[in-house]
Length: 84
Image (cartoon, rainbow, N blue to C red; front, side, top):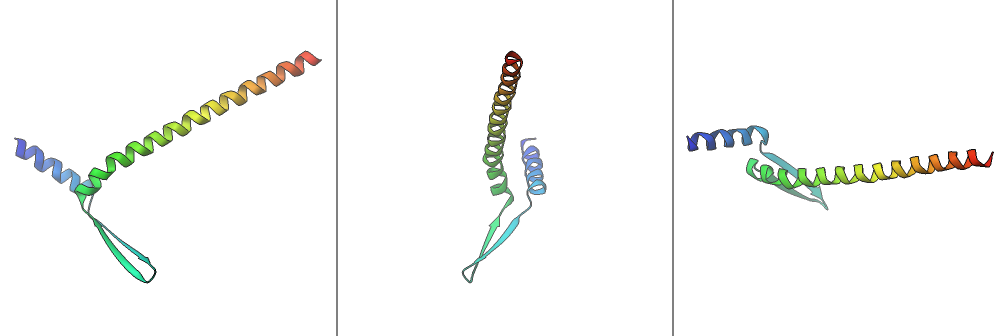
């Protein structure tokens, strides 16, 4: 049973993260990197968590900015109405 679960998990990792090969050429040299499925699966967790954290931070900042702008706009309308 446990072996079967491990085999299924390994198959899923291999299907989701096939081996990637990257060539980088700079200064007349070519470097070749191979990322096996396990390495990609291990790197996927911190990268996705970092990305999610960044997206949420940006959303919080934009919501605060939008709220401040709405408050400023409302204050300007109140001031314009009070001066008439």
